[in-house]
Image: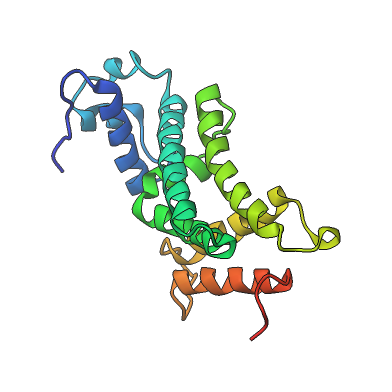
Length: 204
């Protein structure tokens, strides 16, 4: 595979792109800084001008991923306004679409073992992404009687957990995990069952 190299001195971003490719190919612990440097077309020593180590590099991949993720979630949320139900369901689909399209970012964000609080910038990016889903959940929860209404943070956490499970088991070619249904259908019906349980969708 040809080296990506870098242009106009943008070594930091070239290293991020190299790391994302390697994470996608080998997982978050399957590559070294030397490999990332080689793919970016620089010496290993050059990496340390921008990153303290591999975890620092992966954290930057995660930060950029959360920003992209937040933009996608915001677009999905805005597109289906003013319907709170349609907007909420769209954010769930956006999660799966992001994981499919950006596996390197996704692994960095959710599977690297690196805390989203590692740096203030990473924490802010992660919070922005979570806040969009919580806002969609808050909008939708207003249609539930107050005495039966779960906290929006719990509501959104349930959907994130469901989305993550579908991605991990059925959208990433996990060995031994097969389903007769497409991941999109599994997620859509799962969210539907959850929302029916809350009384937000009429029973069929």
